[in-house]
Image 1: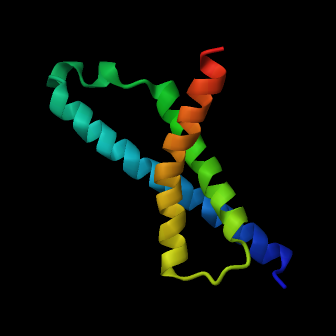
Image 2: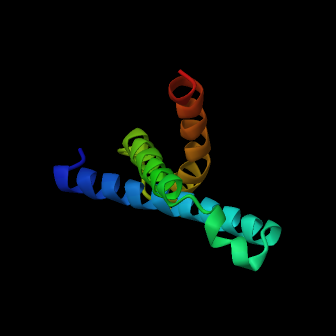
Length: 104
């Protein structure tokens, strides 16, 4: 049986690792943007609001992953899985939001 404290720590860890996964995606996106944009226009192409929302979605994806994996043995593989879910899950959630909420 998992205690409330252990559950809370695992959920917060999942949220943090989901954010880390999304931040990896952000860094890769910024690198690609930097390669395509001239130096003087680089900052103008960044949508800060979208960036913050995207990071928050990574937190949500990591939290959902942690809730799904609750009770599993916590090892390196589990932690990397949550980071990967933060990375890939954000694409899924953003796509879902754009398809069903932005277009309506």
